[in-house]
Length: 230
Image 1 (cartoon, rainbow, N blue to C red):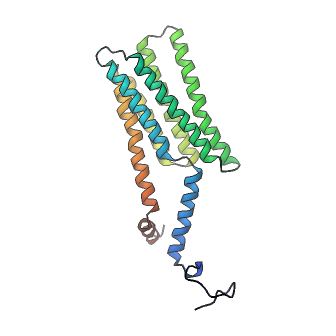
Image 2: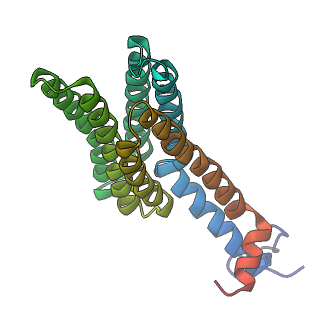
Image 3: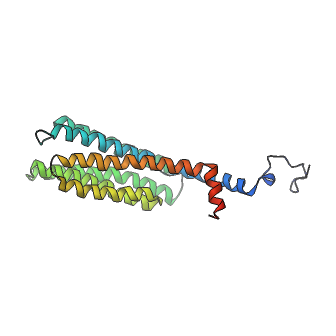
């Protein structure tokens, strides 16, 4: 058995000197992925929270407004609760995930998380002001949908740039498209567009995120990547 030149003891089968270079590279990549997953927001959590909030809340509005054109009061509270829940989860998850980092990364994560809270606080105040100014119920409904969608879209675009996540950036752009489509769909179809295009888009991205993570952690995928010289 060969001696370890650094310690003078016999080299064991598990020593790093006996590892295949490809296996060593794979282990390093796994450690890097684990560290990144532990300190950056998990897209599956954020996409899933907003996907369910949009789907449940806006389907409630649409289902109660199909006949009369005006959603039931309880449906509005369902949507409000969904948005509050998704916002709270986004803030808590973003702040918690970046709390183990230091310096600029920690500040960016905390600032990004609290921006959600600030944006939707301003959103509620603006809707209240529109009502006080005498805006019709239809105008208020279109504004409420559009403002919420634009806020989420812009914050996901910002998150994609801050965390260098293409999928966050992509869903942010899609939410802006959804806002435009919903604005021209008319009542109550605007609620259906928000539920299907908005909520559905988020939930599709959850599946995409899961597939990409699974492929990234697969040894076979890593080996194929190394074989291509990546």
